[in-house]
Length: 388
Image (cartoon, rainbow, N blue to C red; front, side, top):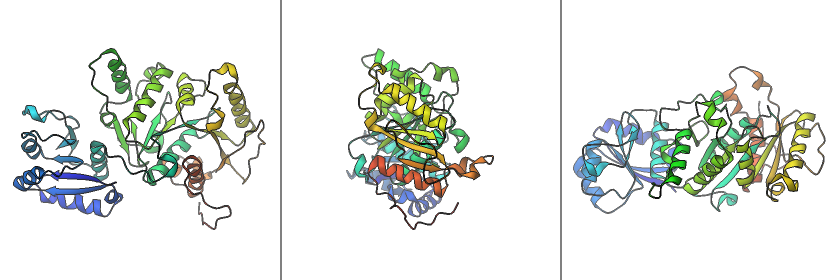
């Protein structure tokens, strides 16, 4: 469902290239924009009773509209910095600020976050609320974060609203993406707000939009990485659980992909308990298979404290596979669901962009998406041509 946006700015030279970009980009399917450069036509339209999903504009336009008390829809002032909109008019408190002059994809992503319109769910397996998907591994250097980010990109490209939640003690996703995170509040501030909301009866409801940032390369939202490693070390299983519950309750995301650190950490335990589906990523070698089987044997035992449904929500992605069959045999009824190929070019320096754009790897990721969400998979022996 496209979001209906009203834009009100004085410069027609600002409006025209923006509308042209929307019309000729992926945002043409995500939003419909009515633009006004004259105050009288803008205010007349806003009095007509047709409520848009969001209003974005210059301060003078927004104040003229809000002074009449018409703040039923989300709104933002176009200014140079982000944060809560504070002007001289007491009726204009409560909106957002969006940088007026920035890259158009970032600008439009901020507008979409503002209006909080949930995209229509086009995938049959994701029509029952938000899916929590945990990405875990029984050993290090399995390529878990690469798999998580490729899944986020694939689901996002299919039109789903995706949040990528990285719970590693040291978030390594920035090595792949090199984004501009900005200076807004991040996950550490959100965790503080969650705790504060439990201590007061009249605490306001926490909204994700203030803390989320857009990752255009992955077509998803995320949190700015926590800069202080100590804060992540102190993050408990309960903290992780409350964070996942908040993302689920927020309602704007079809799927939340949770990237974990070591399987023995408290936070990983919360992911195993809370997520509706789990993808185990393991290397196609003896150590990867052995450690995965040992961890699963422990986690499914009666004394582990895990729920009995753990086995039923697991899928296994064998990474760095060099052939069409795993090189190491599985035991105890654990079998590979997807083989993800070894990509030789990933041994090169600065491989971040390559890791998100390999046709061979994407084919395996699409198969994994199909298993997770009921998306039709490529037929075995397909004639699809892949060039690596």
